[in-house]
Length: 118
Image 1 (tube, rainbow, N blue to C red):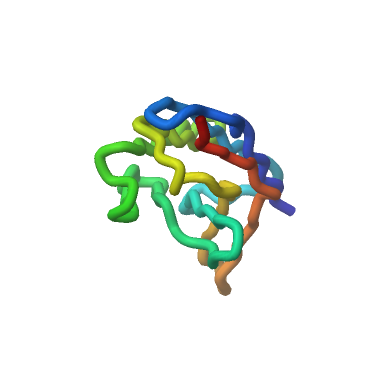
Image 2 (cartoon, helix red, strand yellow):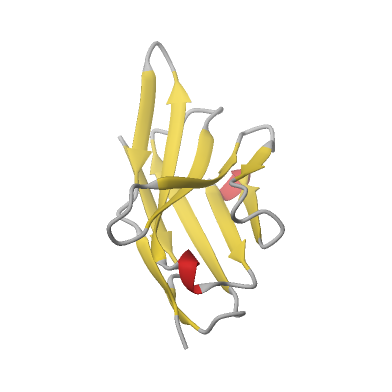
C-alpha cells in the first residue's frame, strides 16, 4: 500500500507565502507522478500542479508565476512553494500519487487547509 501525507497548511495574509510538503511512503514504484490539487468550499477539486518522475512540471494557469512545485525523489516528497497568495487560493490542498502498472493507481492524502485572509 501507499500512504500520502500533506503538511504545511495554515492561515496567511494576502501577499504572503506558504510551503506545503507531501511525503509518500509504502510500496512506491520507481516512476510515478505527484500532483497537487485543491478544493475550495462549494467548488470542485482542481489541479494545481503536477511533477513527474523525470521532473516535468505543469501548472494551472491560475497559479503560474506564483507557485513553484519541486520534488525530492530520494525522500519521495514533493513541495509546493506558494507566493503572492490571494484570498481565492483559500482551499484544502491535496496531494495525489499516481502511476500505471497494469492499471492506473492513484493515492490521495487527506489534505491540508490553506486560508488566505487578513
